[in-house]
Image: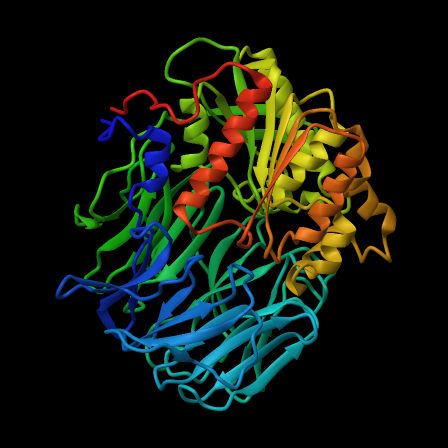
Length: 608
């Protein structure tokens, strides 16, 4: 039930207290770290599970979400950037409270590229800058002088550190394919122990990922994700012994895993067709065993020393909760609960590249055709799932159907589906979105005169590109933190994203200008006829503000109907009221130009 009639359900979903899955210290499992919006801004919290005491670790105007506990649980490392620009340094604070201090004062600010902390107080820190590319440094003691152990122009990152600190696993793309990493295990002095490269120097599109060293002293086994059978699945690689162990985990879709704390088994996370589930696998067993979880999406899971599994679960209908296989709710924040929404329905649509999976939510009352918003996910290597999302729920409350499309490029449907974007970037995704759009109209779900194309980040990019290349298909557009001028975006964005763009488009703007032109929304801006709302963070390093302004200037020059909202943060906001403001502005813009729907701010139907 709605607990406060003065506050609409859609706003309550944003304001309701949320917590992330608690991360616990490997050698002090009663000490945990989690993220919460309890103050109205997402910040880090320390939790002593034995006493129940919780303490806010960070308190910054634009929030903090990147943090990790030291293995002994004595300190919290957290990443300090400036107003969401993702460029900064690691700070260190005692678990019980105290002054923050630079964790590695010898390192200049950078974009983060992985972190692993050793039991002896050492740390391996990955950094990325435009000037240096990727560097990895060993900091032998807290606050000690960093020693560079790796450097390359292409993107790379720290994967993990072995239990005894003698092996460091790195992911790298020295072969030039930023979508498919190779692995290198090195010693603390940077010398190589072993290599694993499924790309064969970039000639094959097969990636690898570090999932973690075995959490046992003297155990050199490394859990690795691979794509050798057309999807992500785990195997065990021992870089010292030179052995690879294939695991009989024959589940459809993508499969990840992590170690149980004693190294005796693997907790398997299985994602398939927008849902996920958990399994337990003991090396040597013929098959995994199901870990029972409700239908929906498990957004994260961890095995505890007592053998129980804690996991963050939600569905499109039900808000997130941290549960345990013991039956308990692990961490239940005080305060009003988020109202429920409506369940999601599956739609499968034939498209030019194969069957496309779309997720549909419809208003609880009324018959179609509905005004319909196509809420396009970012990434592009991501996917929408049967998980709780306050944004789509707000549109449903206002009488809209919501359609989310897992276009080519999305994860969870096999390697070929994810890797299909190259060279015709943006245009391929829009072919799939167009196919689902046509289905939504033909099926009677969507009103063809009130179709909204919307999204954030890559979804914002596809919104702008779609309005320009499919101007007759959309009545309105809502683009948040988008790529708008691809050439300028390339030159202004962080180095790791430059590498990704070179992979997707086959080179730099100077090397393949025709591809950047074909994939840039700026190329088609004069064809945009639908009213367009754009929001952008002035400190965004991923979709920088200058290239958005270039696009807006072109709209303004010809008097196109548009509004722009600029906010003082980076690639999105961690402040709850700011998020609510942005959704409210989008709703008001849509209802003003489309007509109909509920009044923005009015309470929605009561949740059961």
